[in-house]
Image 1 (cartoon, rainbow, N blue to C red):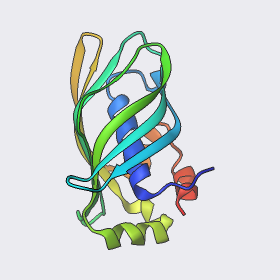
Image 2: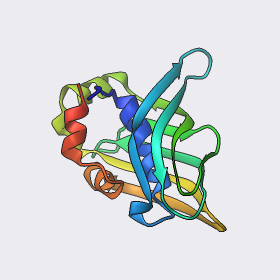
Image 3: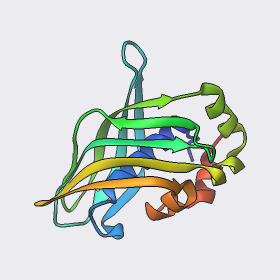
Image 4: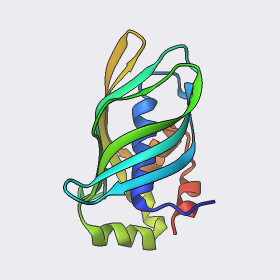
Length: 166
């Protein structure tokens, strides 16, 4: 299994959270990340290519999304923002290109997290996104949800995430 860095993990969590807000939990399945492209000149950007399956009868569109990963004391570690709308076709499994900006507020804090994966248990996620499925549009918000609960909600085992860290 390929080792993931913190930015890969933030990107994958963002995609799963945004996609799971408007449908039954088993309608969207995340099968992995096939490519990540970083552009560091100008405004830093990340393009993530994720293998995602939508078994529902509706196209799923995510836009205006931003999620933050924070410590228990409120210090933000990083943020993921979608730079343009992303649509996942209905009843399909596809490589979905997700353009976003990923920022680490404190590089040392991010490195400390990678050095001590056990610290993941004390982190939480906050953010919001607009999700449209068929004719329904919904603004989903997450406020200080423990990272472990967030991971379980989107179908990722927290222990598996810890093993993926270098």
